[in-house]
Structure formats: structure tokens, C-alpha cells
Image 1 (spheres, one colour):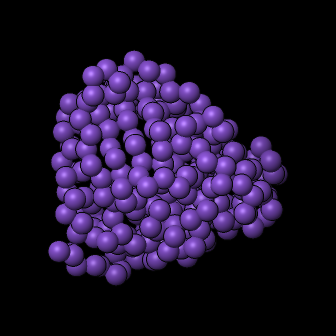
Image 2 (tube, helix red, strand yellow):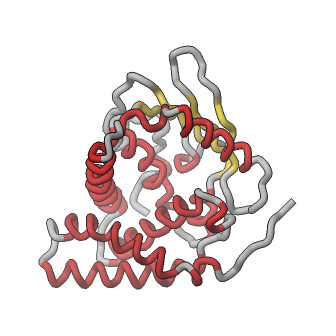
Length: 248
């Protein structure tokens, strides 16, 4: 069964997605100003906005507002707009990766502070039973394969004390989108973002293999009482494969 594809979804929701992108650009701008003067930083921000606006209608439809991973997909494609502009002005592949790490960690710092201000422990959110049940249901829905460009995942139950729960991701919506947009080379940066989130918020995360590094599926595991090491640079990660991480 394949559900109806809404071709103009991203066009109709353009203002909403552009507002979210502008929020992301606030932390990107802080990183730009470490390298460029104010005028150049503003110029690059304008180019990034224009690039995202150009890409937006071409994002694959995976259910729109009915699918919560739509927001994940749009955020990752917004990163692609940033990568493209950095590449255009001469950043190397690895320099783009480092820039990405820096602005993602800056955004996570703000997110961590907001959660703590709201009385929530950022290091424990993946282990909340309500969150886990929600993710299990969402994972089961991906098995229906309603949208060909969506994720397909298996929910992995706890195994002893090695991890609390996880996903085996056999199909990735970001990988499919980046491939369609001609920029699958940047997928490893998005994969590394899972490690960055765990590092920034303080929860335990491990993965032995990832689609972005050529594996057949991702082994995504949430681990209690484990300090996630920094994943930048990524060379010591078990999932790392230099074939997918070099100057292009």
C-alpha cells in the first residue's frame, strides 16, 4: 500500500519551515562570525536562505504533518543548504564537517538549557517510558511503508544491561532525500549528528554501523549510565569508514 503524495506540501508550509531555518541560522551565524566579518557573514546567511528556499519544494513527501519525522527530514535538508554554500566558497569536505559539528553543538547547548529551565533532565529524555512507547509505535508504523521515501525501522528491545532500547534502521529518509538531491556525500555528517545530540544533551548512545558509512543498516542504541564520547573528529568511531569520509 502506498499513500497519497501531496506534491505542494512544502510549498504551502514554506513560511513555517523558513522560520525554523532562520532559528537554526542564528547559531550558524555565530560560527560564521568567527571566520568572517559581519558583512560577509550576512551575505552568506542570505545565500543559505536562498539555497534552502530553492531546495524546499524538492524534499520528498513522507506524510507531511501526520508524520513527525517530516520535521527531522526538513531540518537535515536545511543543513544541506548550509553545506552547499560552504562548499561554494571553498570549504573542504572536512572543514564543512567541523563547521557542522560546531553549530550543532551550539544549538544543543541552547536546547539543553531550555530543557533544564523547564525542569527536565536532558540526559534522561530517551529513557522516559512514554517517549519509548511513542517511538515504538512510530517504528511499527514505518513497517507499513506508506511512503517510499520514508524511514523503515525495527524497534529493538532491551538486551541485558548493554542498552535500554534502540532502532535498526534499514531505510533512511535523509539518505533517500540526499541521494535524490545529488548530495549523498554529505550523509555521514547527518549520521554523526546522532552522536552529537547524545554528547550535547548528556545521554548514552552507541552505534556499531551506519548507512552513511556504507553499512546495510544502522544499529542505533540508547545506553543508560554511559558517557557518549565526542564524535568529532569521527575517526575512532566503530561505524567510521574512511571511504565515505574524504575530500570529494
